[in-house]
Image (cartoon, rainbow, N blue to C red; front, side):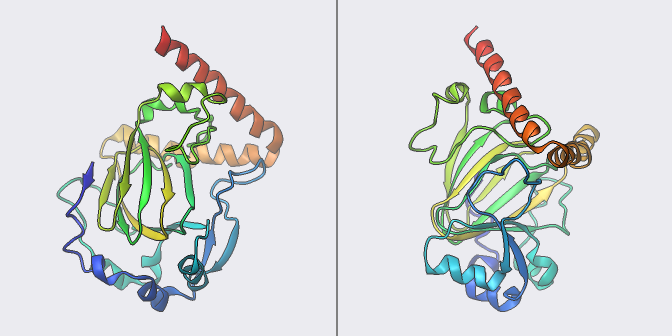
Length: 265
């Protein structure tokens, strides 16, 4: 679901610019991520480099830079920013109001296919620039090569709008997805557990407002993902990185083949 008018009345719609953010938090150090897929020894959410936010903003304004920032709690450093938008409580309950998050990317940067590990429902509002999104329900996990103990796909979706590598990942042709291009001011609602792959068509940023699932089972599943699944994945990365790296991909392929046979049966 795309909500086109939610942010139009927010002060943030016009007020939030590169220059404004730089003036507030330009001196803060942030982790930046390139487009390379994580290697065998890379822990979950491990950054590729650390620079100041101001330096990063200068880079992405000067030209295409395939670096992005995610889960940046800019509001922790500049709490006055929470006055620039309104929480959409009319839609869902349980917003995590201490944790609105900023996502920033240069033109060409990519957030590879994954679903959010806390299983929150998300209202993702785009500011400045455009972003192409591919979205799938969680029941498509096996068809898109979900790796065990992770919220990541083993398949590549880079430049998916031009072509997918269906020779290497044949099950992808049977997955059902939604797609859109988010423009300035548009808000995309993502239910908890939805897979998403995002490509920055221009340098830009977005804000995610997160709401916990209101059911007990949903909360417990989110807790398991954060405390259990992520911890086990990181432990195995430390203990047996090469074995675990290849094992995850082998299992993902086996599950995809079974899912493909079910579709064709």
